[in-house]
Length: 534
Image 1 (tube, helix red, strand yellow):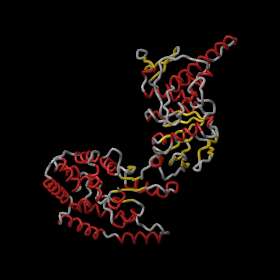
Image 2: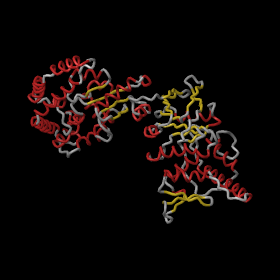
Image 3: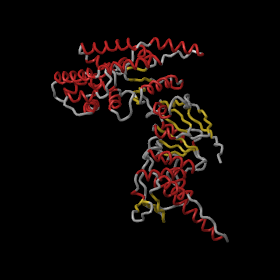
Image 4: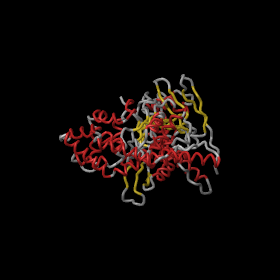
């Protein structure tokens, strides 16, 4: 049966130093770039907020040194030992050595003491109750039991072996391969730690977790925190992160954008859900301080690697096709919550004509001065730089490259012209009068549109443009008009490089001390966008 979420109210620091309340039936997810004050906010919640007595914080900086054995103590002392750092702490912040914002937690042993103290306490109570009862009593479900069951659900191929005052681990079903807790992997230990810490938090706590994804494989992040939240339905969880994958996985959380922190005050804002903005895109933008530039392509490709090197002052986000780039830029620029962000798009020229290029630029979407992004690896400036670094003859290499490319273009001249006619025809068809109504109006609009498309004239025009490039041996003009993604491979051969090596060599140069040289060689081909590159 579905239950109505319990609404809780929490106070956050407002811009002017006062407090602002948020009432929500969801957990809170704070998204912010590095330096936006996430850790400091977690510290404020624990030390200065009106809710401070309910806050239990798990730091990103923590030791994962797990002891093999432990000695229990009274449950009251064990709880204070974990929560305050000592069974009889001299002050509230002893746990943090009086440095709550910067100290690294080293409390794994204290957690183990609490878990085994709870185990000992509950088992002792059960023993007394069973002796006094004439019927069988079900044994208690201790905190250690809950840790074990949750841990094994997250890591079903492993099993925790709890006996006496120590914990061991084994491969499920194989008693021959058992190892002590100190020999667990980082992932195994942090999963145990996080489950145990959240179970140890006092009732109705606000549990603040800084970098909840740390040391965790992406495949277990969402299942683990779902498991922990189910174990503590009485608690409000607050996650502080800049990890896109983790943030996207927290579908049920209320997202809060932590914009900035000036040392005394935070600038934050509730994130509004937008249907035209995918979650991963929105969160990645919110988690960066850099201006954003969307480009065609996919992660791992040579062109995306090149963009990220020469545009290292930007957050480069690949969006696949040019249509997706255009959609992303327009969606972000139209979002009133994100109006202050600097958002741009770069797309291939792809046979676009001047009117379309101009219309796109009005939306901060800039067109390359080459037909395909792959052509950036083939510019005269880049080829000269590569030849120089390979200690080859620059003039001979460039001459051979040009001859090879022009020969290839001539062999497919009619195909290239035809493809340009097709592209322009598609663009014109997209200009159908959307205001037309009724059979007569629609028929008239369609007839008018089709009559305005003269394939013969277009062919003659584009044939002349491409022929002029050939007649003038205009290499730069060729790169602007020639759509052939395999061009870097053909040209690489002229420089003595194997297939794929030209692009790889250029990227290696950009990642070395030659980044500025590569950037300067490519800037002239980035069109108007080049003015934004310092």
